[in-house]
Amino acid sequence: MVKTIRVSEEYHEWLSAHKEGDETMEETLRRMTRGPHPSDVAGLLTEQEAENAKEAVNRLRRGDRDRLDAARSAFESEDAGE
Image (tube, rainbow, N blue to C red; front, side, top):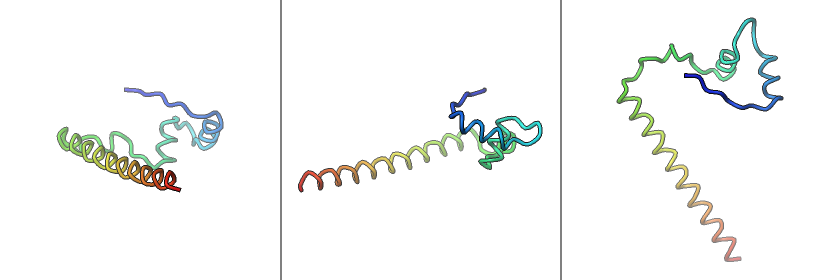
């Protein structure tokens, strides 16, 4: 599956300037961000393990969102009291 991402013209120019040889943009992005190639990680997790990992990440993100909302609420109620 292929996805398209939108980047600013400036970022695209910067990234293009860092391409090496006949490297594709994906290869350049992976090198620049140190991301693994999909074939390097394919099969490391079972489908169930991958689903469990996704759920764990989502729980952490919800926790972060809950803490941020609580901090924002406390800050706003403190401002309203002044």
